[in-house]
Image 1 (cartoon, helix red, strand yellow):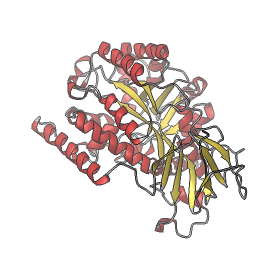
Image 2 (tube, one colour):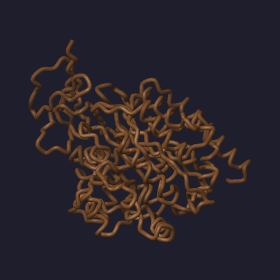
Image 3 (tube, one colour):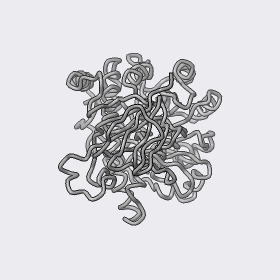
Image 4 (cartoon, one colour):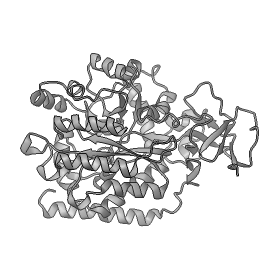
Length: 458
C-alpha cells in the first residue's frame, strides 16, 4: 500500500538552501521522504491529508554537528566558571568521572529532548570520557535516541594520554588504546547504519591532541577508513592547544593531524578557530568539515571561527551547541542566532545574512556529516522538518517571518518531523514527561556534585 501523502500547506514562510526550489506553498511528505515541494499559490499534484501551516515558518530539520550530552549534568557549575579551556577542563574532569549509567541515560534524554524542541532533527554527540561505571555509554545513547526517534551520529570518543604521559586529563579518566580500538569496532558492528535514511551512525573521535597519543590518532584513522565511518575531533580551539602541540610534537595542530592521516572529506573538526591563512586553504582543498560553536567559544573566550574564509576555501561548515557545560543549553535554534550575530560582527552586516546562518544549521551541517539527503527541502530528501510559530511577544510587528525567526530569537519549535514521523507536536515530545525527566536529571547532577565533594574535587 502506498504511503499517505501529507501536505504541510501554505506556511507563513519557508526556507531551504536550494534557491532553485520553491516551497512557499509547503511540502508533501510520503513515508520517510519529501515527495513534492509546492510553489507559492499552488496546490500539490495529489495529497491525502493536509496540515494547515498558516502562521508557521517551515525549515529543514536543524543539524547539530557537535555536542557532549553528558555535560548537561554540569551546567553553571561554580568551580568551572570564569576559566579558559584548559583550566575549565581540569576543574570538570574529576566531576565527570563520577558518572554512572543512570546519569548518562538522564543526560542523553534531556539533551536530545531539548534539541528536538529547538527544531533539531539530527545530532552528533562526542562522548570521550569512559570509566568502568559507564563503559557502555554509547549503547545507552543508542537506546535513548531510538526511543525518542532522534537521528544521531554517536562518536566513540577517547582519551589515552593522561597526566603521567604529558597529557591534560588525569590518569583516572583515560583508557588503554587497544580497549578503545576494540570498542570502536564493536560499536560499528552493532549499531552503524549505512543507508540514506540511517537513524544511528557511529563515528570515531579521539578527543584532542592534548588528550590522545599520536599513535592512537593514527590507528583510529586507519580503523575508520577500514570500517567505512567518519572521523571527528576538537582542533584549533585555543592558543593553549597550539602551544601544547608545538612543545610536545614540534608542529601546529593541523600539521599534527595531517601527519597522522586525518586530512580528508570524511573528517570534521569542532571549533576551528586558530587557523592560519595557509591552513584554511589546506582544509578547504581537503574538504575537511568544520563545526562552528559560537556560544561555547564566547563563554570560554576561545576566539572566533573564520566561517566565511573556511567556506570560501571549500570547507563545509555546520553549527554545534557544544557541551552544556560550556554553553549551558542544547538549543540549536538559539545557536543559529548566535552564529548570525557573531559572524556579522566579524565580517560586517553586508556579508552575513539570516540565510547564511540557516544554511550553516541545515545543508552545511548535512555536508559536514556526509548526509546528502538531509538539510534541505527537496523532493527525494528525508522528511526531516521543523515548524516554528511566531505568536510570542518578541515577534509582534515583524515585517518578514523568516527574518523574524532568527533576528527576534525563536527558541522552540511547534512541530518537528523526523523520517516522516512527528517527534514534536504542539510543542511537546510524545512519551516524554518533562517534569519527571527534569527530576531524574537534577538528581543525577546532584549525585555527581556530591561524589566529587566527597573525593575533594569540588
